[in-house]
Image (tube, rainbow, N blue to C red; front, top):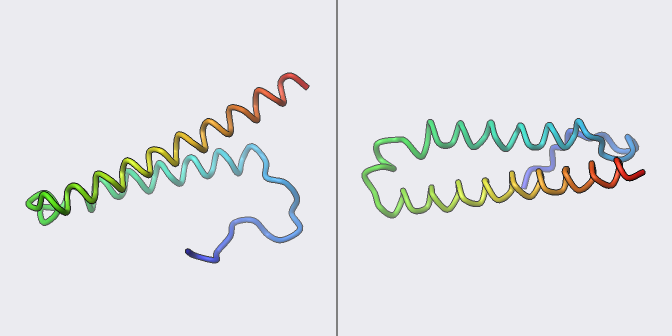
Length: 81
């Protein structure tokens, strides 16, 4: 895992922008992966490679949904005060 962080030490809690940014980055990465890797002829010609790509896209989709669900839960808690 990369040790690069978009959050500097001492910046405080994550805010709504951080969550939106995470969702956006997952979406951009998934679009790029699908367009340039999963759709590559070498991948498409191989059932094994295609299946591996499908697992990756499924996991990425699950990550997107999990971040979105957490964001929604936080927003609901905030709205209830």
